[in-house]
Image (cartoon, rainbow, N blue to C red; front, side, top):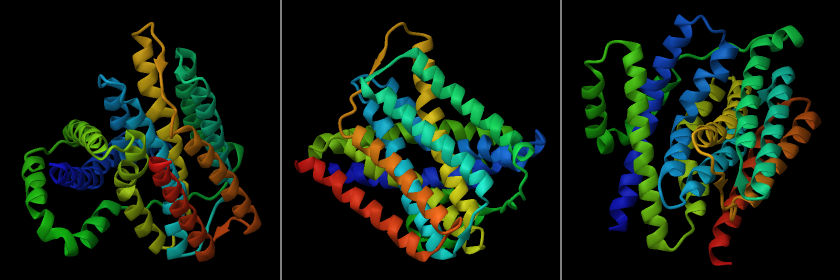
Length: 351
């Protein structure tokens, strides 16, 4: 029985990656072009939604599901943020030395640090109130506005956008996994083939991502109960890594194209979206239509948030010391930190 749910988990991860990269992000790119959004604005809004949609829907479904399963959504977002900042940034630095534009990195790092501090404040008493959720959403709106107007405040050269990242991922993964997942690839092609309008592709992708996120939440609950592992630990590790794999592969491809700075900036930007909007928006919507407060169990989560803030401090000092460059030594160090974190998270099961 448990093997069945593990298999379902793997298939859901694969389908999420395919739908997000090959259909959802492509439709978002077309919407951004139609709206004539700048690369900065589309990256901070539509592209952030594209890369973080699974985490967002897992948070919404876990929060709405009866039975106090909100820790699955929060754990997935916090674990994904740790994976992004340590593994994705580290892997990008391993591929090729990343030279960063400090203007945008400092902006994103400052907002990211404030996001984590706000999360620590919200978790302090284990109660989420309407004004706290409102601050999360407002801070994300302020972030978007700052991104759109940042060049006016601190002019800098824009980083070119790399197209067809999803296509590159598809070409590389098909060689090894095509035979295993061929039926699912054919199914997706069959489902999407009649849909010609990019808006319909966008809406249909949203529905599929939401459905697959529900499958992930249900599978995680069953696996955690069967193995006697806290659901937060499953979310912090398995779900977080699974939902971040598309980001990792895309960042790896971009880094190979000597655009490591873009990969690192996108990782930080996605984390800002995950924390401020991925958590803040579901809280805000539920509290807007309810007079009750949301009680959250911060067990196994509070320490991870503190570690998340510590990683920001470490990366800032590394960037300043290396004059806004990250090489392979920094990459190995960051990945090693994530391995230590995983060892600590797993040890919490037995302590």
